[in-house]
Length: 173
View 1 (cartoon, rainbow, N blue to C red):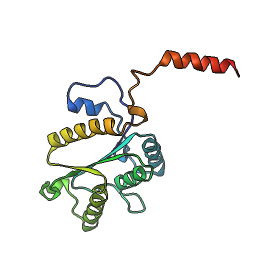
View 2: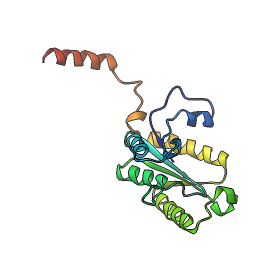
View 3: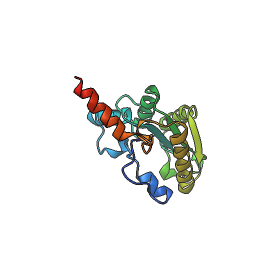
View 4: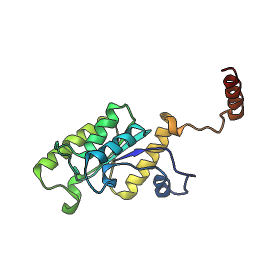
């Protein structure tokens, strides 16, 4: 999963490079599981413009309460009204055993999470190239159809006029 913040520079030429321009946040970026780590992720998600969740064959690491961090991230983004874009592997049973959960409890939790994700904007992917193409297209569409604070173009914004007005108003204080 990842929450998206503002881009970190100029757009890149190909889809893979464009995706690297986003700030990714998620529990997988932390080496240890702790309340402090979750608080950092929580803060990042609260400040994110979009939340992207990608599921394949694993439920992922669980917190002490038995809920996976990815599911906690999803639930938080949903509760905050952050637009969620979901990507589910089209055929998780076809994934190699090494890339899939084996424990029955994890398999059930993954299936439950997949059902949650299917309630939001969801695409199904088959391989990495398919995922990158769908992710790029979905994000481009989301930026146009549902612009958020960090994704609003400012090339037409009257900066000089606004600065002059701000200075005038401050002088009245």
